[in-house]
Length: 63
Image 1 (tube, one colour):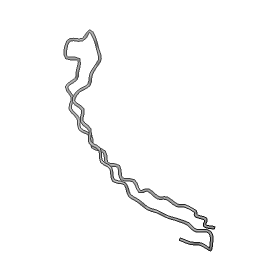
Image 2 (spheres, one colour):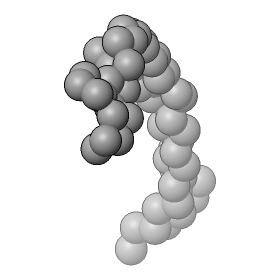
Image 3 (cartoon, one colour):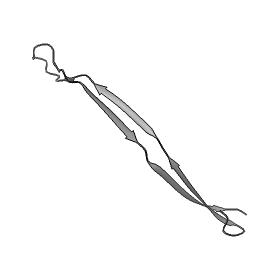
Image 4 (cartoon, helix red, strand yellow):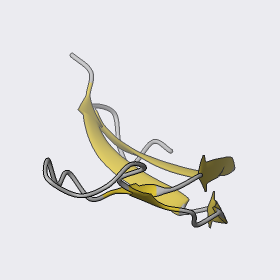
């Protein structure tokens, strides 16, 4: 967008789409003297969705 002969401005809008899925199959207790196995048998799945709007502005000068 031009404001006058030399100065102008910009404006931009974007949307980002990102998904992530992770899984865990146990917790390692890390105890050396404990009887085998040293894990708690837990199973979990986690899904994360990240969708931000990205706005940017700028000023331009042309000579």
